[in-house]
Image (cartoon, rainbow, N blue to C red; front, side, top):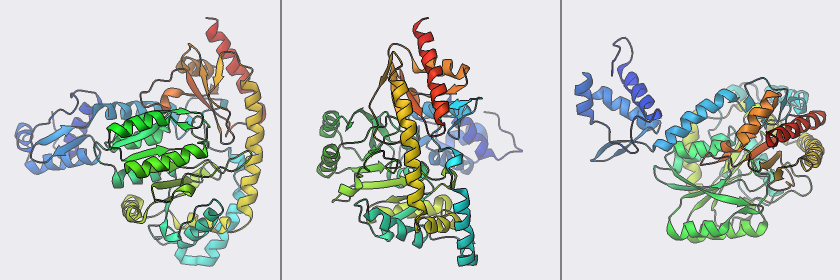
Length: 463
């Protein structure tokens, strides 16, 4: 290892070891040189190595065993991180980086749906009302007025919680990350759905968890497999998207929700419920797992990104009191607080009839899009729908004997973007699955895009 004396030494050592781990130059759980031996070898003092190792441990590239030494973290974690970085060159900020005329990959709402003028009025109102307070740091737990109105809205959803039990977060991803940083330790067992949200998979792996997945059925995870795991192993957390799941679009049955809560109490584990799409129902709004939770087993995450303006980065988290204090502490040391201007303006928006008008409008738009897409997808040969969603933004479809990557590349040549299923899988195998999202495409684009998709499928099967 050649060091440049003009640059910070410990960071050079950190970067070199980090790169070697990412490039699989170490075997799994390999022991690294002791502080003294590495310092001697590189001609630096012990403190430099200590700082390098501490930084590597902070970023989960290594772990320490007291009295034993320093070891390389599970290499599968680093492999996934590297692959994610490569993927992000194509899928950056939730959008395809390559030129794409019709984008079924993007799950952010179409910008034309944003209530910009109304929200601008809310911003101006709270600036006049709160003056300098609006630009000071907020309570790390979140603006009290916003937490109060959220608790009132939750009553309509059968979730009875006090404003003090609500943590404002900057989107669902931050909620997952805060839980990971606060409670998940190296080797903890975390169960996820198969398929699942890629951001959650990455967060849990970076946290050092042993992540296991359970196949999804049309009414939720396979409970037979869950019971077998619970009978053999102690798990810490179960991560679920119970309503209008991403990417499959399914919702858990009430019976299955109650059974999962029963198992959580019996086997002493917690459930992380990501409920960011339940406002996008087409018929009846489904109840959350949290609304049925009588034993405080559910950590509930809700983001407003799917139904409002994603760039605001707003959401909230509910957790048992003994855990929420640690989450608030981690939130403070992550970004201090979510911006007060946004929180206060959104509180004013929620406290009016604007929210109900906006969400009702979006549900009408998305229901029409869903019906058009569903009718067209049913006419494509060789394509199988996993389920018929009753809300949300997604279709999870499978090609028989043709890889989703092949379809992805074929449609991309024709300027249509989709997401291959491997992105949502722990084992990174797509098995022919593809996610289609209609959030950012208009009805005429849906018709044109799915006609192109049909042509691409036919071309692949006629090769």
